[in-house]
Length: 416
Image (cartoon, rainbow, N blue to C red; front, side):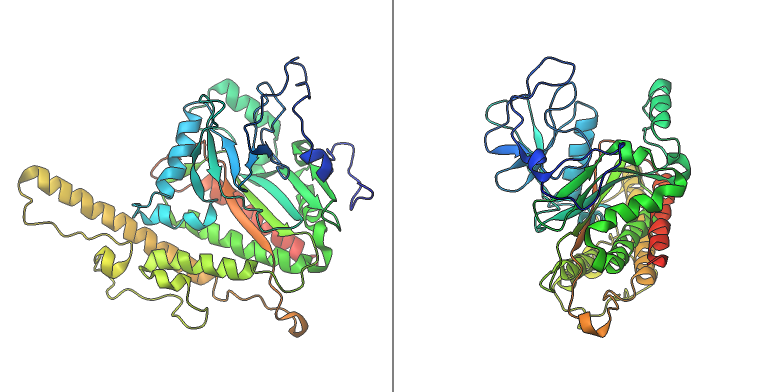
């Protein structure tokens, strides 16, 4: 790299794009004396990875890969974590899924393309995921762990103590910057900051870390921040409405284009498409996803306030009626359970619809007249679900962290 955008501090880890992409097959694992595991045919180490286990590092040397078709390959972890994460993805992207809690989560996750096993090793398996950075030329990427605790309910006391000691400010902040890639002024320039830098940030220095992440495209920084706030509020609406899942040690990826963009970007339109897909799930109108922003009723109202209706007439709402074949105590219990399930789901749909309407009344950004045709090139996605547990309550720790993250982005915005 001939020049860099920023000079990294001593606590930060710098890697050029060339460093990230070079073949590491012959590199010796530090402290193990073992060579790297062979790369599956048609794969390479993930060059734009900013956190997590990397290929060629650690005790086993396994890590994130990129397939020749552009998809991301994430190693399936040993049980129960791997089984839990794969199962969570599969439930969300199941073609037969009719659960509004899961369906409305789809726009926030990288699409699961399947579970892949390399021909060379039947013992290894990977989740094949859509690459959130696929359309970016020189992305700046930030990996943020969300939640006040980074251990799940099954962790023993020793594990809890170790996790708590890694980053003491986590409990007050509710989130942690795990790693970032800050793009330079050309596609061949980028600086990587690892978890050591993130852990060096006290509560009072978090805005410094966010500023560093946003320094990859200073001319459009203000609008990038606005775009991220809007997208994070969508995720917050989902979490404030659902009372089924607890997310431990889960992360958010925030991505924006580092190069100067000229108005040809379609990121805003893609977000709008996701938004209407989201609403279409809630209100049983899939065509919302493809209609123009100003040609549809953004928040269609259900026909009746108390009628649960059917899936055909009310989208994801469940019918609470019983069939003529049901009889006896067993059928009564089943009918009661179905009615309760329908009521819970409809409550979720109503709550989420209300929150989304309140937080996203206007999807278009308010640009100055001279740049009205510009679209912000940014992306957001939730990742890491090995520690997601089904518990019937609000995920207060995740909500706390996400609210705080939005508040810090608003602080950054006020300073611009």
